[in-house]
Image 1: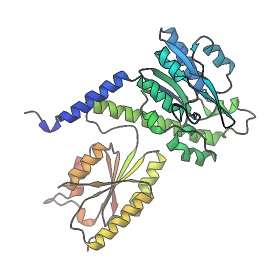
Image 2: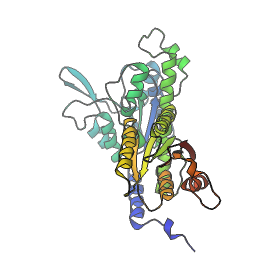
Image 3: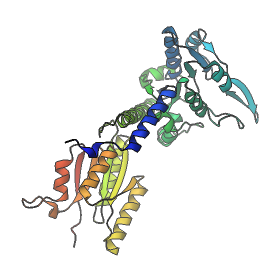
Length: 368
């Protein structure tokens, strides 16, 4: 007999069809992600354009960033260009993409450097990455390049490493829409050799940490691409490439130990920390205050806090963990939770059914 519970409802099917139609109309986006200046991301981007033109694709250059090195000049001199438009505002020079000109030309592929650049006030869009969104929406493919220091949600991490913060930024959500992301992974030693005499270049330790940030960011994007593909094709899967830690909280939880351990692990692997509690209407005032204190600590540690609802705690935890692609679940337990032959505790059931994630148990206070 077919399992009707796994059959998608009509609204879900409609969402999948609409998402597929949007993907078909939208231009494809490829991003070369660098971890530091001079890593060679712009060269890789333009060289990709050269190779595509040689394969017969219609490629144009829409922007070249800063001083053009001889190796890049040798490539772009053989490619058609739609020059940027110079504009001046408040004494500052801007180079703005010629969006109307690109629309009229409508190439297959547009090469765009300087993704994080701002546009002057009064422009079609405040920032260049939004111009790229417009091109993609018209069915024009874009190949672009950006450094991890310009990814908005990663700027705090970069600042902790280098002590500096980039003036311009691109939201991570933009990268998540990429069809392809490639880390330009030059060894830090080679980068130090290229920048000899440049006092502004990060040192070897900093370059190593920035490289790790870029690799993890790219892995997160690939994870979201995978999840999007599985969702679009109605495939259920809980595995991915990002560490996602779920801390289950109750009034009696040793919340500090569980959350701090989860935070350390999430930070170590540049993953996500989630905290969840099961809705209970019959909590005593004292227990409710304890639970609120635990949730406040979770928010203080930047955890995503969720409320689980349902008739069965174990089923709610399992469903949420699968939905959120959780890799580890932290749970409190007492001596009363030890297995007995005549009764299966919630802990027993979770251990038996936790085939998609690891389960860590933390001692907690006995209920009086």
